[in-house]
Image 1 (tube, rainbow, N blue to C red):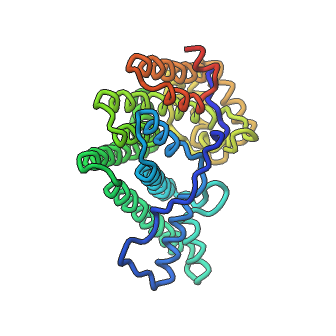
Image 2: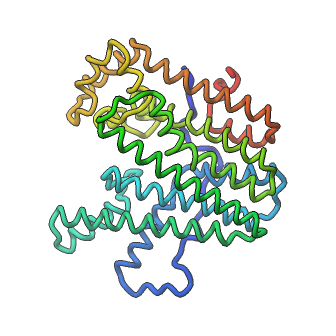
Length: 350
């Protein structure tokens, strides 16, 4: 079966984002305002550092030499990621990320400690999450807009940012609509969500931004955009497989939560078209799903071919990305960086 590497990318330890701070003239006398900035800043820490790494590799391999500009743009991409993550937690009603309270969870706890009721405290926490995400989004935009580069380069970067945010918002809303279960989800719908919600901003954006900053041709930027979408979609598809079939000790994520939440992925969309779905459907979205019942569901998904179908999709996307990159003459350094995100046997199989 096609697999993606689940471990952090070696050597990609993101440093503190110096660009995330209150702007000039912003006075934070209020304790809650200071706490909001602190919580938002905390949301920018951790992670694998994939986005700034891809941006730096694309920039350097295409001839970029201004480390100051590159570092600022790399931080800006991570700030955008932080904004999306914080807002995504609000949308998903999550109060924890990476095993500790996120912005919403932190401010919900602050409200409870102050004597607020449960529902009011949760509302306060959600408000803080929205506002913290807004702070990170504006900070990202400011960083894009003030990159020390020629005006036409900055204009292209801002256009890229605008397009990325618009596409990511569309993907997020599409994902939420799938969860309503008012439509008949198709595999194509889930692929669109994977591309728009994950691949565009996590892979295409940093590759394209690095290329634009380096002064690459329009054709090169377009090729990197498409390669990023293909690899990013493959990455998300495989992550969805790990959400059901993964080894929790290795991945660090639950192999029950996606089934319990009724997360609509390509795996589920395909299973709905098979005779196995009547056996899977009662467990799908069941918050009381037991590990034993989940094992039975996995067996059904295996036997009906849904797991293999999605694994094949992963391989097809990676093979297409590799072919496109070579045909477009993209730098080998970019391909090597993308290979750090996948197992060597996947690429050699293509």
